[in-house]
Image 1 (tube, rainbow, N blue to C red):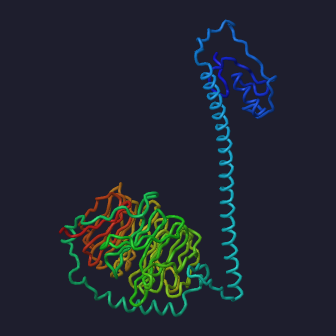
Image 2: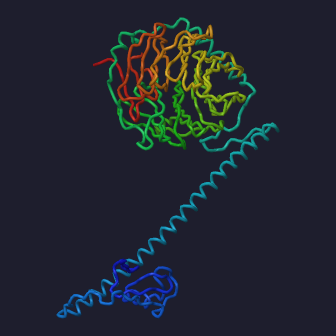
Image 3: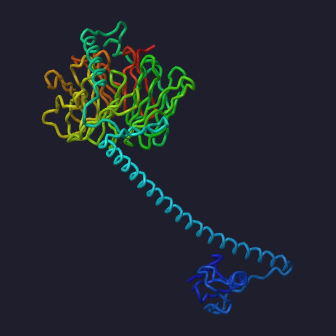
Amino acid sequence: MSVFCAISGEPPSEPVLSAKSGKVYERRLIVKYINENGTDPVTGDKLEESDLIAIKASPETAAPRPPTHTSVPALLHLLQNEYDATVLATYNLQQQLNATRQELSYALYAQDAASRVIARLIRERDAAREALANVQASMGVAPSQPAEEDVEMENGAAESGLPANITAQIDETHQALSSQRKKRKPSPGYATAAEVKTFTAIHTIPSLHSSSPAGITSLALSTANPSQFLTGGNDKVVQLYDKSTDKVLASLKGHTKKVNHVAFRERDGESTLLLSAGADKIAKIWSHDSASGEFIPKSTIRTHKGELTGLAVHPTSTLALLSSSDKTYSIHDLTNFTQVFRSAPSDEAFSALAIHPDGCLIGLGTPTSSIQIFDIRTGAIAASLAPPESSPFTINTLSFSENGYHLIAPDSLSSVAVWDLRKQKTAHSIALGDEFKINKVLFDVSAQFLGVAGSQGARIFVHKTWEELLRLEQGGEVSDFAFGQSGKEIWGATGREVRLWGLPA
């Protein structure tokens, strides 16, 4: 069996054994180390030359040494000394490296422990804020607003109905939109079914958001500036992009988990607002600053204790609605960034949100296949829809038609149902194939077409005849999509890309 020096890693010519560590060394190396340090190189214990035990080779007749180059003895002795010094230095460096690794490991453990302590303190702070808000509410003391613009809306009306002025706004909007809707027809120049059939890929905007983690989760189009669109991503960022200039106009941060939904609030005479809702339980609002041309944070909404599953701007343009997995939904005033209503906890979590075009009703999907319809003014449930004889699944998307008579939502993992709200029955069901998993359903603003996006692209159908007009399978899975201006384009989010389909050139 061969033995090796614990310092040089080579077979020793004159092996000795350390009585302190039991390690084998080359005599000349260990003697030099003892003279310099006085310790055992491995254990660090005090070591003297007398503690070294010579190892007798067997057989005693060892192989003869090669003849020395006696013509250059001084040179050979110098080279030997340099080699010995290099081996000793290498060994010392290895020991220092191991010690540094241990110190780094201890530092990482300490940093992880500090992060956990900070997270616990933040939770305790939030709990203390909530307790203070409850005490203030019980004593009739109005909570003070912080001076900075990024306002945390943790307080507000809850479970007590909307303020009278908000209800009046909703009623006024309902009357105006309801009378217009009944007479509304597609505008001149709106896309026809024959034109939609000919849609083809016309443009691709690549490399949006970060590549790690990659993926666009939500998409919204601007009505005031048709070339601009808003996206939310798995990278926790909200991006505003201008297709006409191929530039990112704003990259907005503030979420700590993926962004689930994004929306525009565009109103004549007022600044454009960008809204987002994330898996981190918060919603963010940014406002366009005309002086700098940038979007600045205006509000952070921390009302909910669960992941936000829905975001929508009310037809009044002064209210925003949020739904959450914490079994509640809330309403927020966009004129002063305050909460005006939060529903009482439901029996089930909410997994999707849509607003009726008249503004009086909201639809909320659940993880148990049912759809709850609420009257937004009173918070009372107006109807409950559930597909007959279906296995439980999560309704992750729903959309009201512009005429207000129909609602589209999944009725299984791979099919969608069109509900007649007047009869509260399914008018039609569209099967998409067992491999198709639904991400988004949407009516266009003319109520002529409906679309479904999912794991195998997107499909466009004619409302009422249910004829399939178009399959958009380029790019694979479509996570979100929207109908463009006058129905002349369809925008879809595929991976890190936004694709446009329209009439061929």
